[in-house]
Length: 198
Image (cartoon, rainbow, N blue to C red):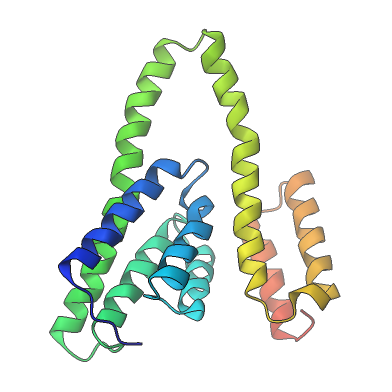
């Protein structure tokens, strides 16, 4: 994929990710549906495959799950360079995409979290503070369900794939009811996928 991004486009990427940073209650992954709308549908800076691969690779890799934002920024920069890393300019654009995306997604929420946490700690006995904390739980769950729905919709036969739904249900129950580490479930899903069962 080849793009021609202007300075205004890079600024648009930065400001959009910065605004999403303030909405990332429960982590950056909860904003994936809007990132998809912005990057794939509206701007067409990423392909569907680049978007889903960025999330899948970041989730499988050790480290924080926010790394998918870096991969999306990398792919936007790479696409702006013509799709290949065959020059110093291509590397520069890809790295600029990483820096812009990560700075935008981390800086506003970090400043807000630091400030709000200090205030909430000082006022932790107020009823409004306790109610706010309890009210955020359903919002985080709904945003995670929306992200899961978006990733499922990318599967070409999701509606008729019974084994995939069974695996999803079993994984959900195991996460909810046991202390099995998520990497074991991801590994089991990879093995079942590699064997062609899901």
